[in-house]
Image (cartoon, rainbow, N blue to C red; front, side, top):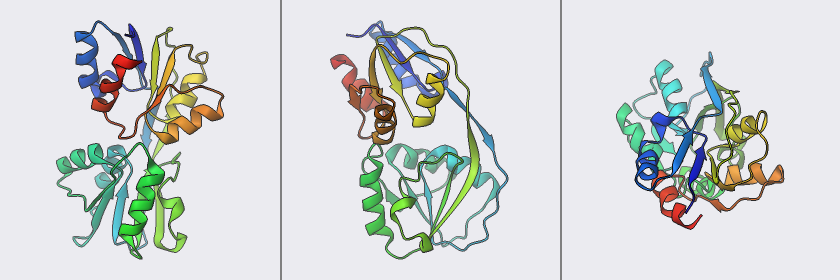
Length: 218
């Protein structure tokens, strides 16, 4: 069993994980390595569907825009769908495995058919979903900026990186992790491997319950 764990999320985001670590005497270090800023944006193109890859994209977008009542909503996975309910939004499409965006993209392409889609997103979006659709049916709008905010982290037995941006920022002021690395999903795994890092585990659903279920085997 590991005795120390780093995750690139802030403490208020990881309450479920924090409780588990406390119960199992694991020293948890939770620090996001990035920060966010709202961007000015306008949407001038009509759309049938809005796709949210994160609750953050939804928050920045919905603060400025009220979509038409006929709009359909789609999102990357169950966790985002649950949080969207707090905005009064029911998702008509929910990705089955948010940690595998290529799989979600294929499912979404079949579901959306020829409808037009708006993608509110980060300035550093990986475009995992929109890139496989016909460009004619896609409108992408950056609604917030993702900025590096690296914080030094002491050596840990295991590291969880929640996004490629968090990983890149972490490495800008920390040495490459010596402990075992857990990727929040396939996109983060690929980013880590491009930097020559070995990944111990990759989450399929990108959920804390899934992470907790594998910690005893790390």
